[in-house]
Length: 56
Image 1 (cartoon, rainbow, N blue to C red):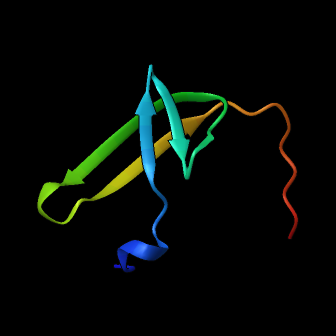
Image 2: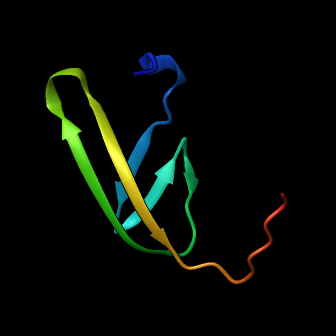
């Protein structure tokens, strides 16, 4: 696992998701699995997006 200095900060406020103080748009669903003692959590997001472009 990465050290806590290189991991994004998660904030959930009024049902809005923020990573490093930037709002994540189009969140349809999310799940947070937390490990309380070391303050590290795993975030799973389901997003709605308008366009899909995949570079190969």
